[in-house]
Length: 113
Length: 309
Image (cartoon, rainbow over all chains, first blue to last red):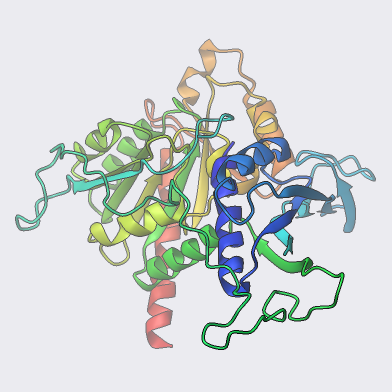
């Protein structure tokens, strides 16, 4: 999907951080991507290769940490794990499950030098 | 350019506002097509990266000494490099979300009820909008932002109803973003307590992630599409507050199982409200108009409360 726009968002965050912290280069970019997030990690890596090419993060390793999906079953009134947005509650089999975690798309950390 | 969906940036064009009932000569005539003007400013995100920020100096100018403490680690020990982890914890879409929040504040201050209409191409969004605007019949001041990759065709269809429409061409982009809408809003002379309908690019995937500052996303699924689309493209149905199951006048001619489609959508989003609509037969449009009017009343009440506060 819109991975190029997301990659440009990552680049902006790196450039803002570089301006504020004055580092020379970025060795690694640590991303936190939720299991239910609207992003394909491999496509994002590909786009990052392209958009980071002429920046302080050129050639940086891209590390993706996955955040597990979780929801709240409104019928069971308890937290349940979720692998897909349309997963049923593992306890009651119902679908009245609201997503509570796993949609994150964040730049968690930069390894800089 | 993104090889996944062709999205990218740098080719966004925002047209001039056209159409609407004449209010004194400043507006273009209804239906007038204005030439597209490529924006002078860089689009939503610059196509070429700005120059890299200056490096931290090893030497402080004028002092002629080596400064090993000026790196990010602010220290130096023999054998240790300045490599360190900077925890920054920033949302990738943070910039878009911040701009969307500004749009939301801007709209709320004027009591404007804004809807972001999202669907696949060909779900009948524009026909439904045209019919909606005809039914509102000027009782409610309304304006439309049309998002498409190319052409001003949709804006012209809206302008033919007498409602002003502004076309945003996203170029290679596959969705509207908050910055495009932020740049469109001041050009539109929107009335207080009015309705703003934003027809997003026909795409059931990408627009889900981009908040524009709207009150609600409204997903439109037509019965000529697959009933399993809410499961195949769950993000959009998860992001929407209302789903319009559209073209229901065609149900007698199709094997589409409406109940099944609605059940799939509710699996993805148990709070989703669903209305069955047809721009052709008019089915469900009373409920849709009532839903819009309730939203307009809420937006007006919030503005009034804000004025008193």
